[in-house]
Image (cartoon, rainbow, N blue to C red; front, side, top):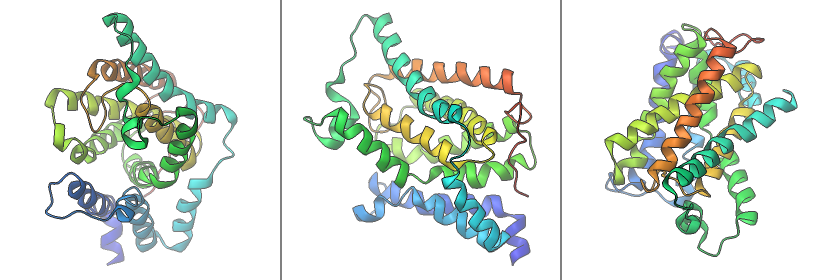
Length: 277
């Protein structure tokens, strides 16, 4: 049994991740004939952690499972990587919103940003921005699954760029239930491109920090946080798609620079790609 699980660890791990998280997401979207309680809904991101640690324990043993978990707290990676994690995505989002505003000669309208739908119209960004960031950092366990579990297994057989593009497609597909209520094929095409470009940035951060899940979790959380406070298309609305398109184009530009400078083999000039046989 252990040999079978190890031989098919990538596929089985992905199935477990999708099974847990899609069940919650599809019920929340009204596709399934039941709705999970809110306390279970907020564990959606932890499904990646549950599946990753379970499969690591079943196929690699206790020591490797502990090693994988500790990557969530790997913080001694150099201040420049924290800066990159905290600034790249916010730059792309803010630049996308204001470039769209400049080209359309329409000032950004912050009155209907997603944050006000979550916290209420009177919510103060100064208070709720750090609250949302910390909440997302703690509850969103996606990075354990995508970068901690899936990416190293892909990189064991492919170069970093190929592995990243494969993961980017999977990552985009996983988000499909979040767009069920307002699906638009063209808009979702831009979503796919976003995840491909963002995946390159995340792999670059992950490989260069010798597998720090903390760094990529920070990058992911700040992206989600800034996104809900800016007038831009998101998982609950296709409004302000122009801002989203420019945001994605900035991400693509950064991804291209990363590929050219760091190289497709490792997406790093100094570190080897992280692999797991």
